[in-house]
Length: 126
Image (cartoon, one colour):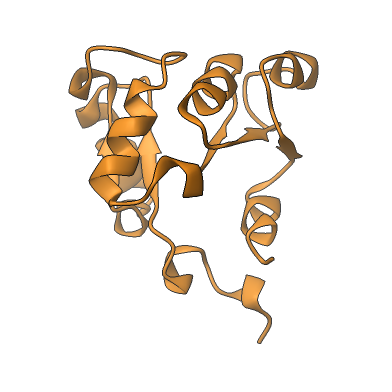
């Protein structure tokens, strides 16, 4: 079995969600799609006083996970996500299937452009 045949959480990677949605709405979405079990932390807009593009929410998530921010990657689909990741000091991965255009994501500091969740998983094979 190749490494990418196993999900990121199953490999022992600590995963979190940082979202501009409120905590209850974010958890509801994760529950509806049976995804909550993969994430160790969810940081919603109502959990922090500073919001993306400020790096604060990402720093809170990394601290909660017990992982140095420099060892984190943030996957997001908006220029605010890329700006927050760069300001926080983690790798900024653009999800090109979301709301941001490729041009806007690059301009905001995307370091890697990925077109699907499969590509996200494969990016961590190295």
